Amino acid sequence: MSAGIRILRNMACPELIESNPEDIKSLIGEKAWRSHTESLVSNSFRSDLHFLPSDAQESAFSGVAAHSLVLFRYPLTAPVEIFECAQDVSLVNWPATLARIARIKPMANTFVQEKPIKRIRLVPRYLADLLTRYVAIYIRIGSPDFSEKAVSRLAKEIG
Image (cartoon, rainbow, N blue to C red):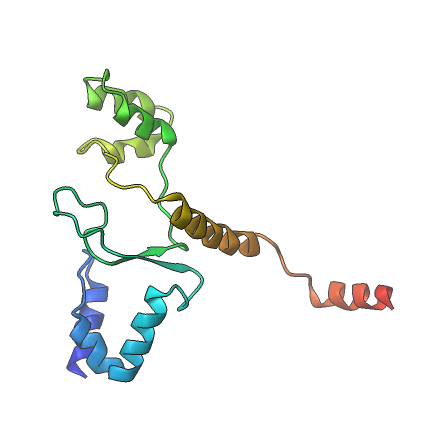
């Protein structure tokens, strides 16, 4: 019971606070915990989640410091222009560059404090799997269902 309350408190905090896995394990039970974690690692838990193992690098150089999940339903995007400028070594005044971009794309101000750096890339084999799963979710979400009336009418037309 107290494990569940601690998890709920973490979820209610405006900052991201990682829950203790032992709390989750005690709440759902050892057998369910093992089943869920195995499903997560094998990418069979849910189609809108994708597991990325830690890259086991020192934290200063790591792109995936801890085992992580890609949450396909909550993508964060930024204009590619920001990343292209971040890689351009000839641009010496990062705040001025962002100010120029922000006139058209205000979200660029998100990157004023810290210049984005490329820390990781997925090898093509894993990237293809990740992108296929991501696209599959949004292809389905974007296609509207027929109304009941339309289904009845179309079914009658077929025969």
